[in-house]
Image 1 (cartoon, rainbow, N blue to C red):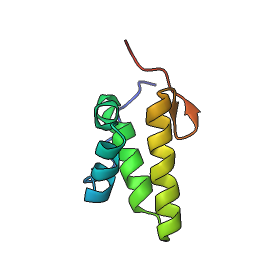
Image 2: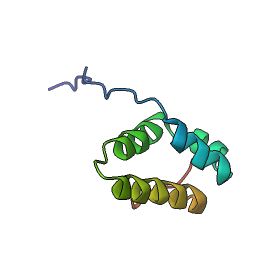
Image 3: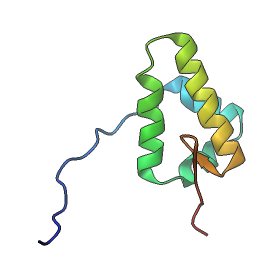
Length: 82
């Protein structure tokens, strides 16, 4: 049976000002921009879905740490394409 492409698409999330500010302050905006579209969108969606401020801060910090390390995405191994 031939494979068909899914027509489902994830909603595109806009980057909140506080997330942009954190990326700039950490010097990670370029590393964020170098990630694939789906990863950038997943990070933002995951952060903005947090109900509690503490959870949002924890998620933002995890994203920043993963971008800084460069080898993780949502606690999974990530190998950037050269």
